[in-house]
Image (cartoon, rainbow, N blue to C red; front, side, top):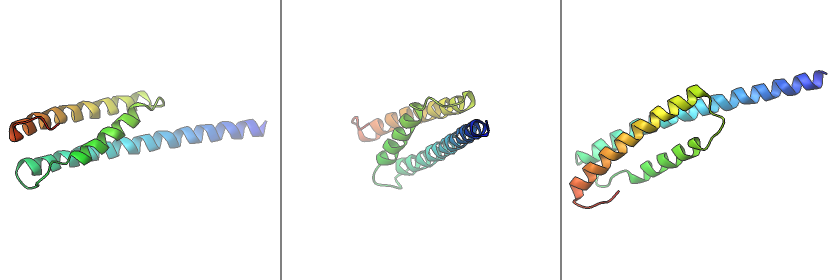
Length: 107
């Protein structure tokens, strides 16, 4: 009987750890969006020679990886959808500005 209880404890403990890791990933995505916005602002104000397209691609890959996670809680899913919505808005803004700045479709 103690073996079954111990197994349940370990499963609960690992679920809590997974939830904590997912929360940490969401915080990192939020920070990455903020940093990417700053990088694009620097580029658009002629502070950098190249747009931060690599950083944007890495962030998109992270977002896709989290989107495939089926174990998100409702709160985590809500937070994630909010972050994706913000990122999508920024991405469209950056695309329009890049198009205007370069005169051609880069993104």
